[in-house]
Amino acid sequence: MEDSFIKLKSWVEDSLDLFKNDLLSLLYPIYLHIYLDLVAQDEIELANNFFDTYKVEFPDKIEELRSFESLNSKQHLHENALVIGFRTNKYMLIMGRYAYDLLINFLEENNLIYILKIMNQYMEIKAQSGPRTEEKKMGIDAFTDSFPLDLNTSLVSIECEESILSSEQYKYDHLETYVLQLKKQRESKKIESKIKPTPSQIKSQIDKLKDLCKRVSLNKNYLPSICCYTVQNTYEGMTCSEISPDSTLLACGYNDSYIDIHSLSKNQLRKLKNSSELSKIDIKGKDDKMVDAGEVVRLIGHSGPIYSIKFSSSNKFLISGSADGTIRLWSLDLFKTICVYKAHTFPVWTVDFAPNDFFFASGSADRQTIVWCTKSNKPERLILNALSDVTVTKFHPNSNYLFTGSSDHKIRMFSIETAQMVRSFVGHSDTITCLDTSHCGKYLVSGSKDKAVILWDIDSAKILSKYIGHESTVYSVSFSFFSPIICSSSADNSVRLWDKSDSSNNCTGVYYTKNTPIHCAKFGYRNIISCVGPFMG
Image (cartoon, rainbow, N blue to C red; front, top):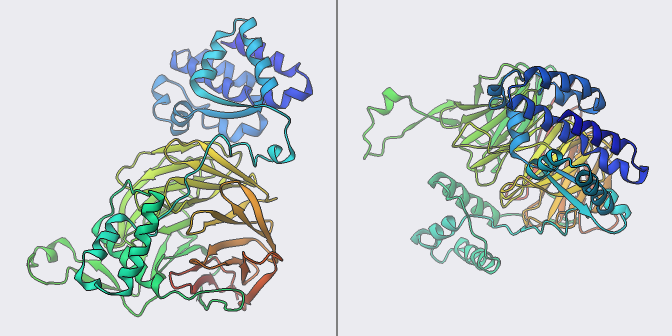
């Protein structure tokens, strides 16, 4: 095994510079799989010697390699999440056709069957033919032909449509007319929902449609109203915040590991009665199973600062990621932890719920993106393409794709079904901090530490517009519903509005706070912007 690696390494390093960069990327996955094969054969001493001898060849992978060097038995291969992901997901590489042909010829001529076996079993190499254009160097067209996308979306599920159309309550109502239009659009696009919604999800979808029917139509001459919530007395301890999709709840995460849930409506928060009280209730009667919980409820469970929180679309659940390396799923009916998810080895920077409330994703400082399911505490997909910390995750509206932003300045798009990268978006010059997708499913908007906001066409992965104006890190971005206005917020204490139909890329409106960096700004269903931040006075 080691001899095969030495031969391959020597040949790659002696190759012409024209091909060397393509071929060098092959050495890292081959090196790791040889090490894991030695551990799997219980040759622990040989494995450790091989690992220690050649790890100096990969100085940019030192942090990742620390997760591998603690393997001391075959059993460890089945317990380390990073190893499991590395062995079950194919490592993807792109290289020029001529470099690939030279590689295969070399392996066959030198009878390096073992290396060929690793490549066939654990790697997927895409050979590009023809000259590389500037765009291909940037990774823009690398996947467009190979992975056609299905970006069709539907606002609500089939079950929600049927519930409205079969109800006497909505007969001859404008909501019925709206749903009939949506149904025709869905049938023409042949959209089918694979995951059946729960009754509570159907109810929240009906409420969503009611609000959408009352939405304000926006343009550069008719800008949205903005409602700003300032959190006082945080003493710089507020680390993240999130507003629920229907703009009725606010969650704030803090440096001391707490999460506070606030009601943004006049109604108090409600929680399920305890078991002893529920046992006294007549099931067939109309007794209220809920009890008032006040205007603020504190969630306690994490043991480190909270870095990201997200509501489910039905407002029944909340997920949170923390410096303690765990993700927690909270019930907003009980205000308690339902499940703790453990797989990351470093702080969890980002979490996001899929619109179907079934999947959610997390990204961490260990460069891993993990897709989870609310029905299980084991990872469903493990994605290892990022070269640095995964700082933001965002699901596509049809829940079939996941976008990830990283400290390596790139945005990547993955298929949930295959865990393969299907698009790469290159244009920012610093860490990606926020992402949002349009409700039609065709556009992506991103913000970064480079102070820029970029609008992308998802299918072609090309930049449509680049908006410059913020004076500090962009914290959040959001699309309006079926209008051209995009909002962004920043550490420069401002919310800015952009018109994606305006080719000049000028800022349409800017709104400053006195001394409040806006952590989160997002459009509600009625196209009213809600934003929140801590007062830093």
